[in-house]
View 1 (cartoon, rainbow, N blue to C red):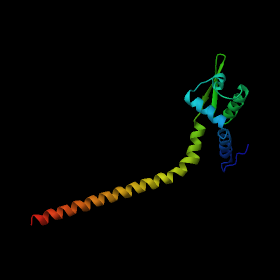
View 2: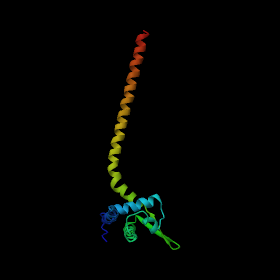
View 3: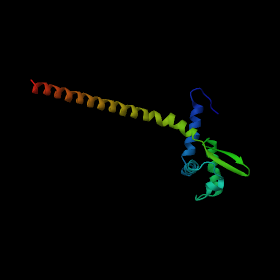
View 4: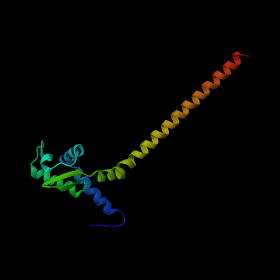
Length: 136
């Protein structure tokens, strides 16, 4: 495993998560776990057009990417979604692109509100002058 200080290990971890998320069937399994966490393999298979073996393989990929964890309860193996890798990707890859847009919207809002304030002050100043000239 490459552990260079330039972040290669982090990139490898991201690659594993991106590869796991690239498959529609795996995203469907994550959606199902998000809707109801702690499901057995049998419960996850219900209503899917995949064999039990295929679902198990997809769960193995998701587990390797740390997107799914599991624990035994008696004879059952319950699967749980782990949102942390997705959150880390959002922070690292998505939020940085959103920040500039949010900053631009905030600046526009401040600018427009500032214009409204100046316009209101100008209108008030004109009204005050008109009142003074009417009473003169």
